[in-house]
Image (cartoon, rainbow, N blue to C red; front, top):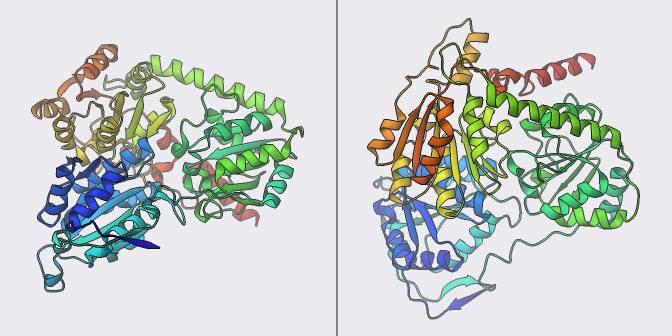
Length: 576
């Protein structure tokens, strides 16, 4: 249903700007271009904030970052042709991350379409595979209706959240329109509806969950709104808990179910795996019996992508995760869980022991043969500085591998399942602008820094009070280690210079220091946060072998992402 807004006599760009602002979208990230000038002007005239980045990819990363830390839809504005193609990697990353992002793309005026116009390109064809919806609006009267529709898709109506692409030719942005069609309810905020659980599925879920002895719950992005319900489920069942990059912070580190430091052992010994809003991708060995040899599966999700990928569940509960968790607890009532408390207590004790040893190792790890500090020393200083409210971003290969296990931040973003390097600075800029009262720190490898290093300029111009810490080992070290171990030491294309990124940052107007001594890190971090935006260029040794290098992730095994899992998979094939 739609109704006419007879009071509207705006041009197309004004229609779009007013809708975004009416939905509480105050900030749009983008890069200027003639094809999008009308909407850029309209957004700023009506009180919106345009954050002009230095590259369209970075602008979309920023919109993605804002969506992650606010839970709202992030918006990016890119010009036609190269502006759109520059954004592709970032849109694909948002797609894999299931992040709600609206990308508005310029397009050539309708009279010039198909004539070889400046920056003309088949943008919709390019965007369809990596978006929830990709539409081109050639009728200004449909702008409002179609914009509300794609925003609903971005938010997750009818499937998983994710990016959408909204293409508008420049002449449509300039076209005056009246009686503009808008949705009857006037809002996208009411369209993503809760999905109640089927009572029969809940009853079967209770039977299986209360009948096993070694259950483990693994969460993903789909569980983000289920903090209270999830914790209650863990408390009642005594199940162990593993988070993932997508669901960091839902359960406090102090909770007795948390056992992330012994993840592999728990996955191997569990007799039931409960996935809540989590795909069985490479990080979970695709759910293979080589990784989970003893487990049955109970899948809970409100969309098919997170319910039936990889290994099917013995029970599959199609429902909003918090409603499903609540229903399971309610139906179970006073039923006594059969969870093996001794096993759970032992796993928790091993987790705490390993975590304590890691913290001690971080504080004392010796430098490499080159005299430079181990990344653990850098991360120990960061760990001591952050608090529960801090936002931590990790970007890179080696340093991300270290940071993921060393920094227990409740709000943590990184390159994600797509492994998309270059997100660090854009994510940190967006997080700082969206959450100005919170500490924001980006831990970025020197290789990853090269993708979007010029966004330091964006941070300064827009007052993003983030601190960027460069782990500078002069190379792509995870690949360099792979070449040493598996390619006869033939090092090609994996060594960089120990470039002075502090000098670069200072030339752009930021406060910056170059640090060799780990003992100077605590005071340097304090100075950096006091003078943010700021950059610390920290030289770290190439001799450190990261957890991901040890696990074999960088060597890309044939059947599974990790060497041990790959070996187990091969053995399983041989048995059959």
